[in-house]
Image (cartoon, rainbow, N blue to C red; front, side, top):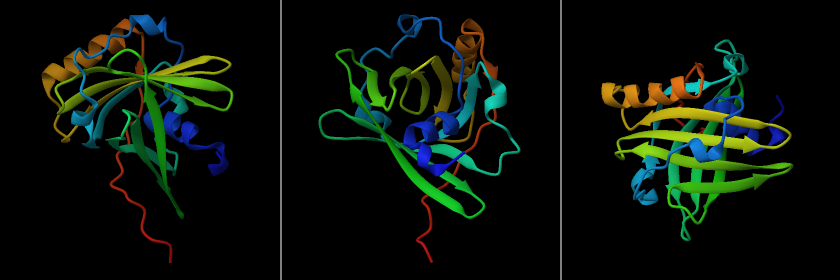
Amino acid sequence: MALEKGPLLLLALGLGLAGAQKALEEVPVQPDFDAQKVEGRWLTLQLSASHANLVSPADPLRLALHSIQTRHGGDVDFVLFWKGEGVCKEANITVHPTQLQGQYQGSFEGGSMHVRFVSTDYSNLVLYVRFEDDEITSLWVLLARRMQEDPKWVGRYLEYVEKFHLQKVPVFNIDGPCPPPR
């Protein structure tokens, strides 16, 4: 994969690509969602996709969500790091609020993306991302502030995995940021 493909492709590969989702409307959203409360460092605990072979555990490049930030005006940034042998790159993906609380959208060359904050207590988070271009690609991820899995949140997440017929894919967490160039 070339670095020139852009930050959207980095987000898709870093979190893990998933297959077609039934309908965007079937995905729930956290009631009374407060974007500022999800700011900060997040660790990926579980990741599911319909195409488990799209993220290989043997791939020498690792791409992972590092943190979530908010901007004035309600935009949300996903901060990603792509690291591998001789490669370190930070990528920021920005999505914009829709008219519906907890739902965001963005665009990229040839398509669009939708993000839904499905469920959160602000220490754990179930996130849904849907990419639409020539086809629909979706992913589900369970995030937490610590590397300790809460059985209640894992159970809730696995209900979505079953409902949408997804498969687990490899999870990567990267400390970041990239070291300064030599």
